[in-house]
Image (cartoon, helix red, strand yellow):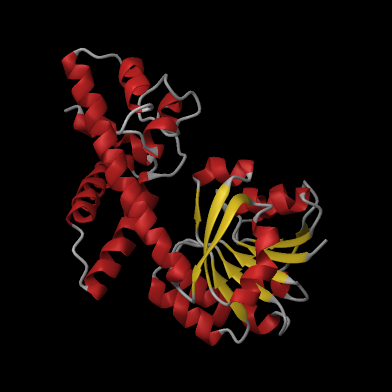
Length: 291
C-alpha cells in the first residue's frame, strides 16, 4: 500500500483517485469543489484541507488539472504542493498541458517529476483502462509505473521531461483528424444508401479500420458503448479536443512542423465548439457534416 496525494477530482481525476482507493492505497484528496471530495471520501479516501496537505507525507502525488497555469500554480505557486511534498516523493501531473510548462514545472519543483497525460476519456478513467504517456526520469517512472497501471492498462515511458505531453499532442491530433474522416465516411455512406452497420462491418475488418471506428463509432448502433448511443454525451468533450488541438498547433508553430490536417481539424472543431457544442462528445461533429 502506498500513501498517495491527489489534487483535481473532476470528470477524470475523480474516477482515477477512486480507483487508487479501490486498489488498497491510502489516498488523501483535494479539490476546490467539496462535493467532488465527498464522492471520493465515500469510497474510503481521506479529505485534505488543501492541495499542499494532500501532498504532505505522500509517497506519490498526482494532479489532474484543467490547464498549464493551474499546474504551475498548484506545484510551484500558491498551491505549494512541491514544497510540501517529501524530498523523496515522486510527483506526477496527469493534466494535458503545453510542453514548455511541463518542463518548467519539472525543473522548478525540486523533486522527481513526471508529466503523464492520459488517453481514454472518462470511460477509461472510470474503468481503469487509461493509457499514460510519461515523460521524466527513468527511476521515477519505474517507481510510479505500478501505481499508474492501477488506473490504466498501459504506461509508456516516452522520454525526458515534457515527452509525455509531446506524445499526447501528437496522439490527439491523429485522433481528431481520424474522427473527422470517419464521420465524413459515414455521412457519405448514408447518402449512398449504405446502412451504418454495413459500413462498420466492412471498415472494421478492412484497411480503413481505426479506433474511431471500432471503439468510438460516431453513429448509433454498431458500438453500443460509444457516445453516439447517448446523444453524444461525453466521453471526451469537443471543448477538450479543441484545447488539445490548440496545444498541437502551438507545438507545430514552435518547431516549424507542417501539420495541414491538424490545422484543418482545429478549424472544424473551433467552429463546432463556437456553435455551442463544447459540452458534446467530440464525435458529435458528425452532425455538422450532415448539413
